[in-house]
Amino acid sequence: MQRRVSVASFLVFFCVVALVAVAAWTAPVPADAQEPQPDGPVWGEPSIENFDSFDDTRWFKYPLQLSGEKDPRRDPGLVRVEDGLLKLGGGVVPAGNPIGSAIGDKRGQTYGRWEIRFRLDKGTGYGAAVLLWPQSNQWPEDGEIDIIEIPFSQRDRAINALHNQPGDVHLQDTENVIADFSTWHTIAVDWVPGSITFYLDGVKTWVSPNTDLVPASVMRLGMQLDECAPQTYGRWIGCRTECSPDSLDMEVDWVKVYPMVSPPDDPPAPVPPPETVPPAAPEPPCDAPPDDGSPTTTTPGASTPAPPAARPVVANPSFTG
Image (cartoon, rainbow, N blue to C red; front, side, top):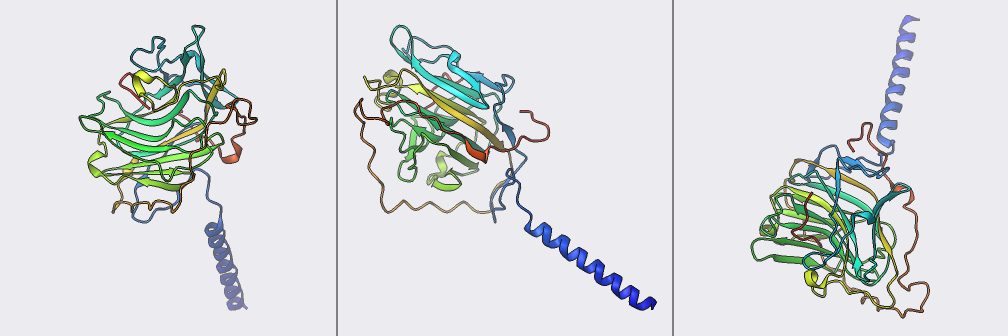
């Protein structure tokens, strides 16, 4: 009798262990967890910003610039946080000049991963950039990583780019970043020694083909909604027209920044270009609803990451804070 009880107990114990193992194997992965990358970089615990308020211990607003003689016109008063969203505003000052706004991260690091969920109102006269800028302000010698640039008024495409070395050696990719950026998207960049990989909604869009342009300096995040600023940007961003809205916003839902714990074993493979690329959307007439340049309103959806248990939280040489 005693022997039968022992065997039965063993079988019960074995079944319990098996069920626990299966549950652990099939349990959903938390939203903040990073998918294992074979031979890829190892990221540390991220700092997460959900913009419940404006944390001025972490972020700084670009200073007031009204002259437009050197840098784009910017007004820190157009930076606001509403309903859990960071909003960088653009508009027109009483003198009739266009103006934008921007913020920067006070924290810098060398290498890592940055993820940003954002959208941008349509409108001629303004462009957006999410970038890593050298904390030294030594540009272009210490590099610049443009996670995304959107100078196009219809927000139907974007650019990944790198700047580095004296003389501003510049590489960019425009073939793979095709989307409607007036709706919500998540962009990301992996920056490791000798390589930079760009992502849109989890899909690789570009891997830097030139290792000499990969910075090795301390960089920090900047997010900018800029007016056309021809004295700075030339014809990069089209200037306002009679179709332009009185005001518009770049909205940011959240930001995650991961430190690099260890680099990848091998550099990532290049991203092949698409077989076809749609033509750029033409500028619509002023009386063509609904895409007349007016701001659009959407909701971020359910992809906002949960905050951690304890929360700490195109550029130019005036990026300071």
